[in-house]
Amino acid sequence: MTSFNDFGLAEPITRALAEEKYVTPTPIQIDAIPLVLAGRDVVGIAQTGTGKTAAFALPILNRLATNRKPLEKKSPRILVLSPTRELSGQILDSFRTYGRYVRIQSALVIGGVPMGRQVRDLLNGLDVLVATPGRLLDLLRSNGVRLNQVEVLVLDEADRMLDMGFIHDIRTIIAKLPKERQTLLFSATMPREIADLAADMLRNPARVAVTPVASTTELVEQRIILIDKSAKPALLVETLRNEPIERTLVFTRTKHGADKVVRALHHAGLSAEAIHGNKSQNQRERVLAAFREGRVRTLVATDIAARGIDVDGISHVINYDLPNIPESYVHRIGRTARAGATGVAISFCDNDEMPFLRDIEKLIQIALPRTERRTSPRSEPSPHHRPQQNAGRNGRNGNRRNGQQQPRSGNGHNGNRHNSQQQRRPEQAHQGEQRRDHRPAPAAASSPENIGTVAFMRQPQARGPQSGAPNRNAR
Image (cartoon, rainbow, N blue to C red; front, side, top):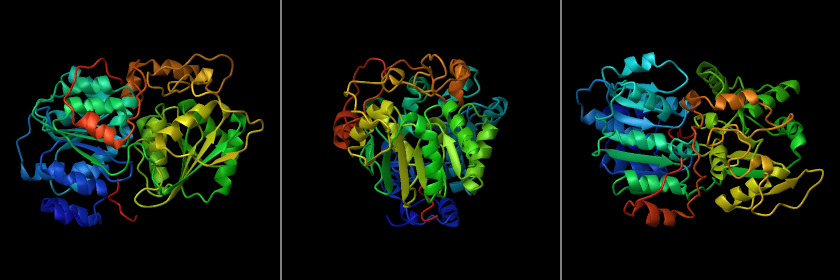
């Protein structure tokens, strides 16, 4: 397949693609679109920025264009679940862009905004509903939506929904769907719990993988700077001033940490904005728009808020805090080097984060180049050691998987007792933040071969509880 015209898509869709100057499909689109058009269940594994959205949106739009039906009240024909507000909004934008001549009825259901308009949008039925799991469950409980007419279910960024503790919600939603449906699961990485979920909910799925599981793109130059924790603010200022940066995305582990970094940059005379779950939806949209337009060149974000950021021209990703979930590293650096461009990922690593660095290198199977900047370098702790404040993968994380924070004394790094209180609010999960989930962290599958033979092609078994530009079509 060398052109979108080769797929046999309906003319209104190819007309919209031509207007958007989409010419050559990406590998995930070449592999997945024919399977979805044929009605197969699909598991798609591809890094962010490879065109996963178009890989499922185009064949779904073709289905709607060639098989029109009267809409049922409160019922969507297509249901797309994604982990965050921003990503959900971008998915809906893609459907509306590619389907502008198909005349579909579509709507967005996310937390952080009033439910009234969402209920009204659903009243007469929809072709496409894009939703976050928490708000969709709210509407189900209030009888604002019915799912008995869903023909296609899409789970996008399934691994991030696992990290956020949404797996139980997803199983609750799936139980409301017709058994006869097409199911598509797309993910950048494939932890074991997602493989198990796929084995349970998909029927003889076709597996599409354009990159190895949990691999990092070769187009990203990756660097590690070993640094004292107290020296990170000065190092960030130095990096932003010395690197040839067009746009940079700075990752922190907590919402409070993101705000603290922005204040430090402002104090140094550098412009920056933060985006995280404590910001209102209007604030987040306004900051994202400024970042896309180049009016803001440095955006500081938490993992969850940044998952929906699809912006061309991000030249640098800076991990101010190393992620305590190694799969998140893959997602973070996937924000740069999109659509065939190159990028740079620079990670600051203090002594307490050395175990996280080892976990990342084990996952991606690369020994990352390191620059020593610590005043008192010390030997790495044993593989079983975890810092007291960072116990395991669920350590010092304002966005940790079970939605809680470790208590702290004094004026530690987090120092945000009000954030701890906010984390306990049930509504927080509906704003793109983690829901409570006390199950263990996922283990990444060791290889694509293991996934294919062990998880996707096996019969479902009884289990215990589950844990929770150049080529613009590459979105």
